[in-house]
Length: 398
Image 1 (cartoon, one colour):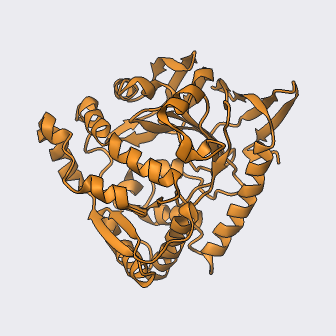
Image 2 (tube, rainbow, N blue to C red; image 1 turned 60 degrees about the vertical axis):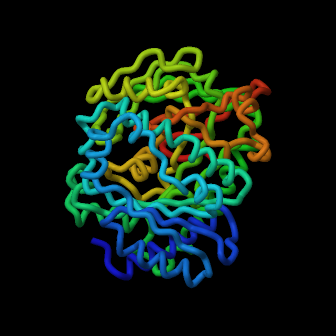
């Protein structure tokens, strides 16, 4: 597992992520730490540092796998949609969240009806909207990370030592000053985003062995990423106009979701929606997830990761790491489900539901990142008629 020195550095990086995701925090503001049981040591360090910063720390222990299984199997319809008293009030006053994930099981919900999971997600959607609006007003920021567990290592087919090594090098915890390196990456990514946002792109053409996809960025969009929200995060992404998604997408990277293992997801998009859904493993689960609500079959995010930033070169059985895979060819991922209002090129606080709908920002209780690590080229076709290859061989062509 991680050493005390690595945990201290991890805490430094997480607090950098929290501050970067929003900006300066004022004394007496409220920050929630939500943590799995195996993340307790890191939670204790961060709790102490938040107090030193003059912030009010709210601690929330996440449900264990046994609790989650009991909840989805035993809960009746009222219990599945139950929102505890005070939760809405907390979210309306929350200034930050730090999520420390250390799952003790990835498959405990494999025999739970996905519709029951979807029902609970939909019931909590209003709470997420509260935080989204607060974030748009820069009243709230968040970050998250993953800690190594025996279950993660087992599902990734790695030893716990190998798994720890991936986390350490991905987050630069083996460096004397990891925060300085994160600041360097932040500056480099800022330049790439500026280059991408200087182009007036009509559509993107994504081509690989198993992908032939057109993605339309849409009006009033900007590329964002490496913002402190996820540790680690090397992706640069936007939320496209879902109406313009056409063609075939394939996820060669497996994933775990709601206790289910999924592999080889293939989607065919027509007029913005996935009209054909296939998977080499877990197909029935995928179809149910993409039937969760009207927006679950639509694109909510398109992302690219530059292999020069990411040191992740192993499947980690964890979306946070797998969506930031570097390896030989970097990766792209397409998320089905909800969009990110942060990719709106304007004041996000003025992005009403009506405006979102008009601009093609997708709305859904689902957000599922489907990752492709094949060698690919991404070409931007500009409104001027010119074309520019923006990504090739796992790197931005900046």
